[in-house]
Amino acid sequence: MNTIYFDNNATTRVAPEVLDEMLPYLEGFYGNPSSMHTFGGQLYRKVEEARSRVAQLVGAEPEEIIFTSCGTESDNTAIMSSVESSPGKRHIITTRVEHPAVLNFCKHLSRKGFRVTFVPVNNYGQMNIEELLKVIDDDTALVSIMYANNETGVIFPVAEIGEILKKRRILFHTDAVQAVGKIPIDVKTLPVDMLSLSGHKLHAPKGIGTLYVRKGTRFYPFMIGGHQERGRRAGTENVASIIGLGKACELASKNLGNEVTYLKGLRDKLETALIKLCPDVRVNGDINSRLPNTTNLSFEYVEGEAILLRLNEYGICASSGSACTSGSLEPSHVLRAMGVPFTAIHGSIRFSLSRYNTAEEIDRVIEIMPGVIKELRLLSPFGRDKLGQVKCS
Ligand SMILES: Cc1ncc(COP(=O)(O)O)c(C=O)c1O
Image (cartoon, rainbow, N blue to C red; front, side, top):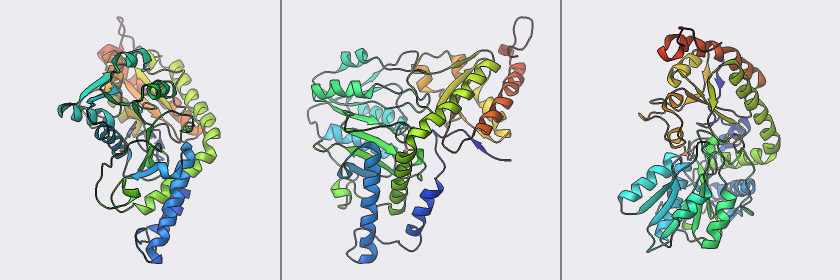
């Protein structure tokens, strides 16, 4: 059975071109880029080439790119650096719908005595800038707001927020892990001080990320040790993965325009068909400001896990916002923050697409899904109307 992979916000396939470019550096070229000899030293140039490719994708200067081990490290570094470089300031602002890489690190800092404000979102998962303005004060060291949400795909007004924070001279970090490589981002015009990205969300391997730090931004390293990354991130470089990330960014730079249209076309086809074919389905998230590859749908009267298990039997991979599926016992904090009713949270499914998905795969899901939902509603006491008829045609 072929796998139909619609879980690309969780992780992506390593692009074949990326793997090709990495392989020599996992085999013969195993030197250390810091070595004096040519065998190691030649890798330094490859790391710098990768840095330029990453920089180009987001409009940065190469020296503004720091390689890290993942998106989580980039997020933690940005937050920690901001509080370390703002002595006397004890307030951090973020949103209620961040990834745990930001959310839990901020909660950790609040236990250490920092004041953290978690700004709410509306029913569409969108931020109200007024809410942010209300909570900024002279004690605010950092605002960290994601560029796009991993569960709903909702894109936040980062440019607008950045303009406000620039005037107030408050550090601004954005977790762009889900956005980079999916939509155009250009830090030349985007007023952010720091931006996180992660390789495995854009067809590079797992275990590599970067933090963009705008020139002139106060910065304190999170990983302390050797002199690597100009003293901004210690640890011998993950050379092969850095090279892979460089290639993935080069591919994304080249393909981005076409891919946005392609993915949006597939996603919209899937979403429209499922809404038409299954009654009582709702889209979670602001459909006017959303990543082109993501749809988060709630199927009333059924459990997301049950849907996932049935889809799994057909080789279809998706994810759910209900309990347990993501290794957590809590239903999605994002959907809860949006005020999605519990019954709808429990029946929520996220499909997230990539360049490797095809129209045939979309057709297959459209063919299977209505039957799966109908069957599960038949089993559910909530899935029948007063006459005992199943609530799905
Ligand atoms: C929005 C967002 N931020 C951060 C991360 C963490 O990235 P990594 O898995 O590279 O640590 C993820 C991963 O799912 C994410 O979606």
